[in-house]
Length: 262
Ligand SMILES: Nc1ncnc2c1ncn2[C@@H]1O[C@H](COP(=O)(O)OP(=O)(O)OP(=O)(O)O)[C@@H](O)[C@H]1O
Image (cartoon, helix red, strand yellow):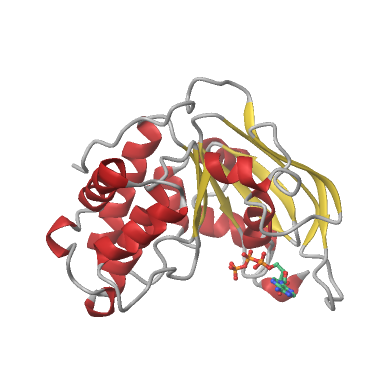
């Protein structure tokens, strides 16, 4: 079982959607086709929401908009009622992003990485040291706290990447393919950690290519194709409604066989 982690201050106490995207359009500069072409999705407080879709479907773009890293061309994006592009600082206090790439300093130890990041979040002193210890324990890396990240396996780096995302006790955790390329043992540990976080009230918005994983973890799944949501629902309803035995089959049928299918 993962370590208990403190419940976020506001999470679980509000009801209604905490993430809203409405008719969002986004085309990258110099790109001929839109990355998002009328994306609409709502995620409620306390949900474990999974977004699945082919490469290039628009998942990372949506997360980047929600985290205030990009601006949409039109449409609405709200995170806990705030527009990330207009209130990036307030939104950043409420959320954390665990990106697809490993965002860690290889030459620093695990604790040094988290201490550095914690200071950037405005934490300090005993509070910061406690948070670092809690986050390392949560991802079961306490024993390797003083080891340089360069010596970590990819699974350990992924776990530390997740631990880093939890430092500021976010109300909403955005995870962009957090388990890509890691072994089943480390993946299982991450699943346990995420379930525990969600049980404690953290809303999780998550993208993955491991469809079984989405089916196992998520209370609701959205299927995105060509920059818009084409179906969504609890996994079992989604499968029943589409008379499909597996999410793989459903995704292939609804979203085509690959990113070039249009
Ligand atoms: N910085 C960028 N500049 C131009 N085009 C981009 C940029 N980032 C993404 N795109 C394009 O936007 C579309 C959506 O990309 P996005 O990364 O959001 O998809 P994704 O669903 O997250 O894909 P993956 O599963 O491969 O991570 C793709 O066509 C992609 O080529």
